[in-house]
Length: 353
Image (cartoon, rainbow, N blue to C red; front, top):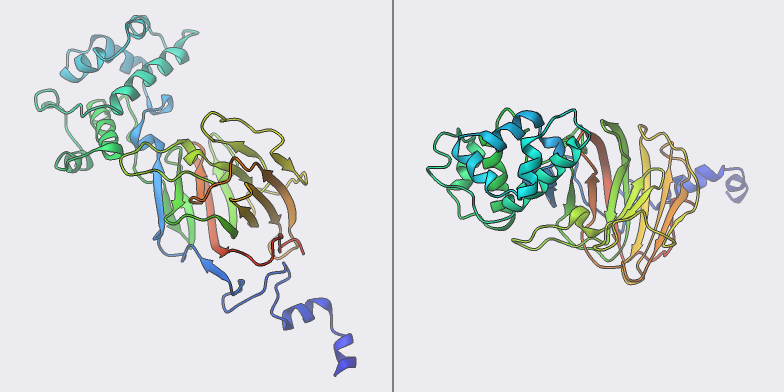
């Protein structure tokens, strides 16, 4: 038997030992026995969603800037009169002279958006007389029946404004992720996140992903060391987390006061050129106590992974949710086979072995 064993290939020995080619001990479902599934391939149970566009207006949400500017400036309807009164004098002056072809058109739209988002995040704008001639969609009418507060109130205000300008503003949605062919799939609805219902501190995250398309395009993004939004609280953009772009290792620091591409805390270990539209197997090993995380990627599937990106900043480490980020509207990404190993015994990347 010993002689026979010496003639077996390493791959065969690995298979007999219950280890995948990527170096992961396999259980009944092909993962580490210590790993727990975070996604069953059927529902988004255990995950929560935040769509930024659901509770705030973006420049891209104004489908006809010239018509919108005209109504805000001269519209006789009660909603336009109300919103006009909430704008800064300088913004009203710029709106009165607005032209979509002018050099400052983008700046004017941005200023209007900023003022209107102050309105959206404030008290309820609903008044029976003000909205008496506005046709409300079912979601708006349903929210009006509730005692909305916090994010729910901001959503209601956003819906009311959208309903008042059906030709000038795009209709936002409150969800941007669905289950499609066994994968968690973004719908391109708008900037936002889907994040775990539980918080995690020290873990090994494994998942399979691919970027389908984007217009405008951006890499798929994973967020760690996130801040969980509290009830009634406006969530931080990207949950204030540390972003790892998969599969090629781009990154961003969304901590309040940072919001930058980062500095020496990020280390690009290997410059990869993986095909983003192909499936990749990703491993992220994170330790909040140390503020450290490492990412490895295997492509093609089943091959040995390569360490791509490291992060270390003790000040950034915090227990919190894990999230997939839809960086902007028009992005379509897919994630599946998502598992997590808590307090891993092997404090090293296992897919690179």
